[in-house]
Length: 379
Ligand SMILES: *Cc1c(COP(=O)(O)O)cnc(C)c1O
Image (cartoon, rainbow, N blue to C red; front, top):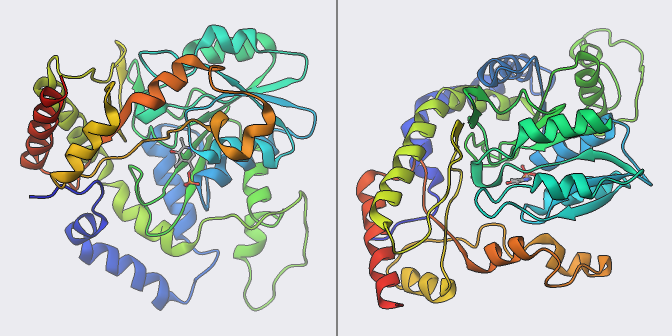
């Protein structure tokens, strides 16, 4: 039996009738743009994470970029972040004109090292941008306190952490802006691309909404009909908003998120119990709830282990490796191998195993048995 890393078709089949109805409902309404699904999904999503305002955009990358733009970050500014992440995190910073400043990670959580973030602050620093890596919350209480003390903004990349919690409080209410992705492989997957910014401050939310929608108030677009109002652009405007079909489908799929988070945590516990001493398993800090978008183990003979699993038909991923500071595009930043030792060590040894609601417990057991057998043979 083969175990796929992802299986979108299986997830679709479970809610096919409702997803089809959502899609055809938009098509039949004729309201392809500026309809009711986007604002309704925003309200439902904000309620789920417990945030005051959710503004949808068309990707996680757009969420990060527009959050930074709305905070006024641009050329000459520095944003402190990590290197073990999606390129979207880094490109979002650079497309504003700002510079990314990479710091190392905590070896247990694989999230931003708070002391290093503090040490990296300069007079040019404008924001700290932690990533909740693989679904484990970054040290947001400490980082938010640091940002407040230094007068910096905090923008969180929570693209891997929907539903994660710190002391019973969901990710989404800690940072100035918390950014989510609805890429098909994330916890809440669209059927194309999508993202959202969750924001506490109403005027910041308004700016994000305008920048992502041609620099105009959304009400002006929604009023399009017999007699559209005159153009009235209050900010620079991108066209990076969410479309009605994605929002309609996401409204259906949002209701699956709590059960799928439970499934991910149950699967992670099955893996941890099965692996015992054959491999290091993910840490979960006390008081935190891991969202387990990825289940990542570390092994010295990672590539051999991966090849052994491939031969058994088990899909794996080199999740967010090699790190961004070692990518060709950033060679001119002169951060060579050895600059971020904890990040590099993790990225050279990590292996992402299949996890998620598309899998049943027997498939998790099969992966676990295969990992044990391959790891034993590599001893
Ligand atoms: C997926 C992801 C992004 C980018 O999201 P897109 O929706 O693919 O643009 C950014 N950061 C992290 C950590 C991600 O996992």
